[in-house]
Structures are given as C-alpha cells and as structure tokens.
Image (cartoon, rainbow, N blue to C red; front, side, top):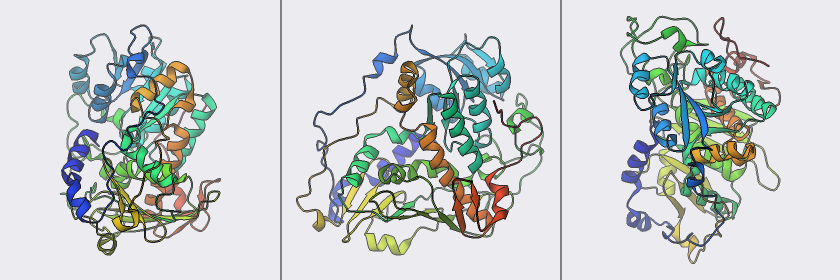
Amino acid sequence: MSTRKTRRDFLKATGAAAAAGAAGYWVAPRDLFAQDQPKFPPQSELKSPNEKVHLAVVVVTGRGGANIDDIKELAHIVALCDVDDRNLDRQQAAFPKADRFNDFRKMLESPRQKFDAVLVATADHCHVPISAMAMHLGKHVYCEKPLAHNVYEARYCAEVAKKTKRVTQMGTQIHAEPNYRRTVELVRGGAIGPVSEVHVFIDKVWSPANDPPREEVPVPDGLHYDLWLGPAPQQPFRTNMLPANWRKWWDFGNGTLGDMGCHYMDLPFWALGLRHPTRVEAEGPPVDAEGTPPWINVHYDFPARGKQPPVRLTWYDGHDHPPAKFAEWNLPKGWKNGVVFVGTEGRYLFADYTQKRLFPAEKFAGFKAPPKSIPESIGHHAEWLRAIKLNDPSLTTCNFDYSGALSEAVLLGNVAYRTGKPLEWDAKNLRATNAPEAAKFIRREYRKGWDLVVA
C-alpha cells in the first residue's frame, strides 16, 4: 500500500471540517495539543555519516522503493536484493556502491555482508523466512505488514526477535503519525467511557473475483521466478500475479484484510491494549481455494484486560459495510474507511489516518481533551534506526512483540473465513479447539529447500 496515496485520498474524503461540525461532531482545534511535551531527539542525530546504520534492503520497488525514499538520508544502504534484475538496475543507479543480490539467503550469508540491519518489503509469503534468518544472523529487522503470511509465522517471528534481542519494527507507518496518538489519548483518557465495541471498515478490495482467469505465460526476462516463489507451492508463472496482484492469491498474500488490517486494527489494539482474541467468526462469499474474497466481515471477541471490559471488534472490507450503523452514527457518506469506538451513554469516537471526531456534539459540550501523554515520533523508520544505535529493542513502538500479536489477530480472520466456522481460539497453543481443520491455514507447509531457519 502506498501511504502517500492513501493520505491524499483521505484528505479529499474527510477534509471538510465544517461539514463534520454540521453533522454533530466535536472537532479538535489545530492548536489543541500544541503545549510543550517530551519528544524524541530530532532526526538530525541520525544523520552523522560515521554513525549511520548500514542497511540491506530486500525488494527495491513498490513498498521497498517507498521505504528507500523514506530512509535513504538516515542510513547507509550498502546492499540491495531483488528477484528482478530490472528493478535492481533502476535502483542501483542511486546506490552504485551497494552490493546486489537476487537471493536473500546468499546476501545474508555473504562474506561481504557489512550491514547491521535488513529492511524486508517482499510479498507476504517471504516476510518471515527472511526476517527470521536475518535475526538469527544478528541483524536488526524492519518488515512490512502484515508481519507474516500465516498465524504460526507471526508467533515464531516474535519469538525469534525476543530470543535474539534484535531491534525490530513492522511497517505500520501511520502508527507514528500524530492523529493516531491523539486518538489513543482520547480513548485512554476516558473521553467516551469504557469501550466494549469497535467497528473497523474499509472499502479497498484485493480479490480476483471479477478478474479474467489467470493464464500461464513465459517468465519475463530478468525475473528469477523460482526465487520469487520462495516457500510457496511450486506453480507456473501466470498473469495477474505481479507486480502487486499477488495480494489476491492465498499462496502469497491475504487479500484486503492482510493488506489493510494491520493499519486500521492497530488503532484499537494500541488504544485498548488488545492482544489475543478468544473467538473469531467471519462471513463472506463462498470460499475460493486460490483467490481472496471481494468482501469479508470478521467478528473478534477479546477478553477483559484489568478494569477494561471485554471487547467485540468487527472488521468490514469490500462492499459490505454496515449501512445501518452508518445511519445510526450519522457519519458523512464520504467516510468509507476508519474506526468507530463505541463508548457508554451514547458516546462515540471516529478516527481515520488524519482526523478524529467525538459525537454526538451535545454530549461533548465544553469537552477538554486530555493532556498529550504520547511523545511525538521522530519518524517510523527513524525510531527503528535510533533504537539500533542505542541497542534498545524496547524503543520501537511497533516491535515484533506488539506487531506479532496484531498480525496474528488480523490473519485469524482469514482462517475463520476459510475454515467456514467460528473459531474458539487457544492463543497459547495456536489452535482452534473446536476446529482442527483450521490447522492447515494456521501453519503452512514450505516448498522443499525453503524451511524456516531455526537456530
């Protein structure tokens, strides 16, 4: 997902504050949180040439290219890895001294390896094989979302990070933006009271449901297709796979939920201290064995946490938004993506990437937002690099412990959908106690020669 593009879309969709006010919302003034608060040191501290982290990047276009743009001034990019020679040719023009590789295994095991950290921006199915191997070899890791291709991988990757004490960060970049931080403060500060219900909705779609059938075609020149397949099942190269449509196929991606769930469910996970659900139920169109669905609704039940009540979180993607709820909440029609926290006494909080609204307005007359308690971020990548320099894994806000649990929950939605029944979830043992048939979706078999590296 391109964060820049999404922000532009959201600004267009939600930019009219006056319209929001007319609809009955409390809208935060721009300077409401301008008071002095503790902050991380500026990014300039990361730019000393003698102290920059030496970085290897796996996949140098798409999300990889966007990450390079964001991090190139803060780190020395000394190795580039991509299964497509054409991508390497284009990117290496900007980094002529960087070593180049097609196979991440050869890069990580190369005697020339002079890097401290690895940035992983591959398709989902290669996230954990690369990340785990890198951590076992002593490298710090930044990995795009979702952290893993399946639930088992997410747990395994978090455990490897803990064991190796590496500094990690998952690429949920919006986590570093001010709007999420202010929204978390409102929820934690009790602005709407205890929260037991959350709705997360998005209209994006990754599905081949309305696409032409895939056709087998020759492998493009320069593409090392066997390396791209990695641990996925052996299969011919076909249309509607690259560069981005791999998200539509279970062998490689996780559809819309896998693409966007970590971004949007991150907000309630953070604000409410969620971790592992106890029950997951999904509904959608008939399951396709190969392709992801055009829409899906997922209901997650989370247990009480201390004094906080149990929470039911419902995810909606594709066309099947909750129209009755939209009418009840009086949300503007332009808002097709976001999170609604349902509080007590008819109080609600809506948020997306850039805005937040408390409603109805009459219940917030004279409302004063809580003091800022979450420091501003120096940047999602900069947090990671600073933590590496200080050798302190606790300094990243989306480390693999937090992001592993988030990714597990997100991916469990697809497990419930593909299994076709509600899952009674035993998080400790990673199993659905009522559905042994879910096991094949929780943990995959790897293609020969591509098993996870275990130290």
